[in-house]
Length: 421
Ligand SMILES: *Cc1c(COP(=O)(O)O)cnc(C)c1O
Ligand SMILES: [Zn+2]
Image (cartoon, rainbow, N blue to C red; front, side, top):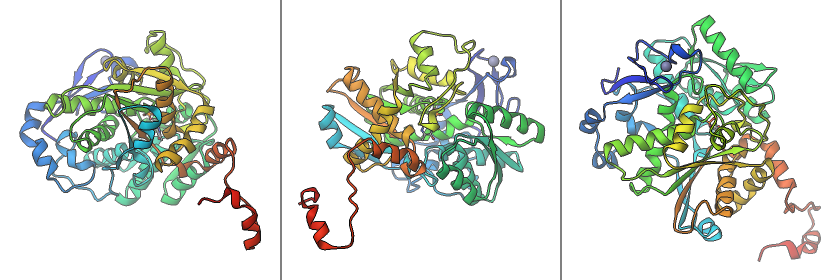
């Protein structure tokens, strides 16, 4: 056990637990008592400094190991996770008239989404307690991440996902050899079934919003953004929100860096939800109580942010409220249009939930929520190749740039007005 890691604190009642007393949630609130991992930053400060970090050749999320709740001496051999590129898009900042627009491309993670950061941490935690099997529910990406990383670690695992998950995501799971349970129901159904199964069989539960350590893995994306910007934090970070784990984790990573004195301000966090899966955005707008607000029926093309009851809603709401941020919603139409627009202006090809952050940025600019003197980071959370059906739909909505001809130069000549020169 990492000696810098102190306690787990319930987000509802504030009760603190030592890590050997509470594994997942505060037992006083049925399944809702999400726990937050507390650190002793004074001790961490003695272990890691900005200067020493900058010289660390480890280009992965493990460069922030002193800020993670794991045994610093343990090194599992996993696919390399983290240190994804942060691109400065001058074209997009010109187009949107903003000081700067940066794109953190998590599509370049080993299994193609930001979920790799959480699944990697889950494997470390499962290893600590010598769990035989790790299980998760997933809309696709969390499963693929667990599946691929477990394949690299030779770790048994089982994935529950709604049978409506995109074909490429289901194929990705199958190729890695995980046991896959396709549930005839929603992600929320798969989540509840997975949780019951973990209790029944004693599997290690990686579920988002239930396992407190998933936030800790994902927060490294915020550490990286700040380090890549040479600790000059942006004014705004925009991230799409389903369960709310990612936005909560971005907040946590920034809080770590503020506590260490490595950054000097907290950016505003903007959460983007799909109009058809807007539980948190509704709750934020109407100031609703997250403990009593019932689940909604989620329906969006952006499968990765389709969640009727966001499992990490407490952390997500804190992230927005405590940073003076907002939630915005975007329609499926806007999400689909954002896919080619982002790709054509930056080269970054996002799945619908990843492009949602760009759609959210455009909406904020339209509504003057972001002003021209502000710098913005958007996170592309997942690779476009994960959902070809939606990509095709996005392309069908715009003027096609594919021309069918016979292999004859005269036919090509007939198309001259379409050829670049
Ligand atoms: C999981 C996921 C999200 C949303 O993250 P939450 O923690 O559920 O809010 C967004 N985009 C992609 C690609 C994802 O896989
Ligand atoms: Zn509690």
